[in-house]
Length: 146
Image (cartoon, rainbow, N blue to C red; front, top):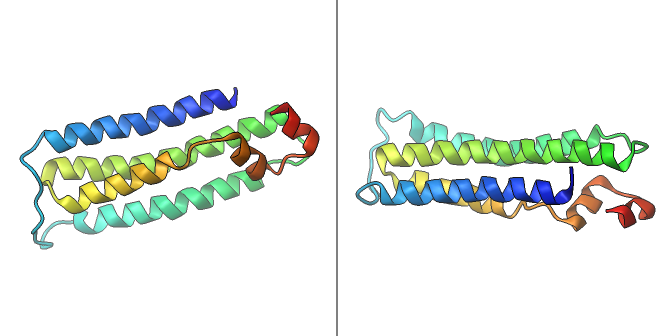
């Protein structure tokens, strides 16, 4: 696979969340800004999952990159890079989806804010040639092939 395919996957994930967020926003009757925390398990779960997704995605991505053999071919390195990137994207997207689903059911502005922050973070994780070269620590001859 190529970098273009990874970019298309990333764009599809971001656009899917944006469209779902727009549907969630316009499907209800506005925001609930004052809410009680009594009996609402998700008031603790959604922010916790969002924090875990943010830091966990970084950690998992770095761990997966550290498993890449420096002597492997460029195609093998890129395949593992792509898998690590998709895993990172999935962790962030899962947390954003949870926040949007909870927003749809409760209309709490907190959940919508968390979802927007996660979608923005995911959007800035777009794969680029420079990130690929930096993350994989490619040699000059491999950089030319990219």
